[in-house]
Image 1 (cartoon, rainbow, N blue to C red):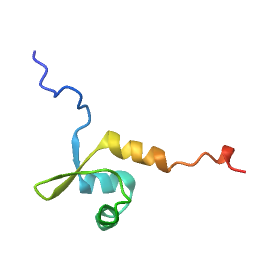
Image 2: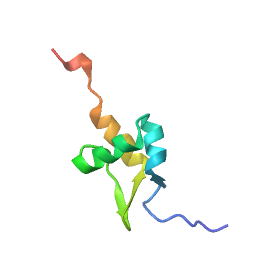
Image 3: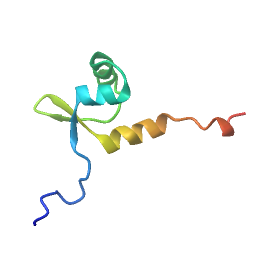
Image 4: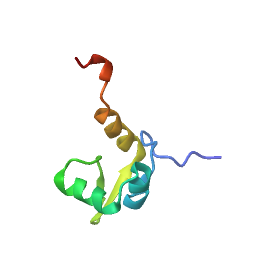
Length: 71
């Protein structure tokens, strides 16, 4: 059996509807975030936004606050 994966790329590209469902927001919210530059990182392919799950998860991790360190 041959390995057909591309070296260094482990996360598949997801459609915006899948990411919106994953984040429990509407697709229009995700679109607003893209326009404002505040949402998860995305790749634009021929005008269509695609997301890598690992990038979305990393974006979420950056949003988390450690309440134990806040005073």
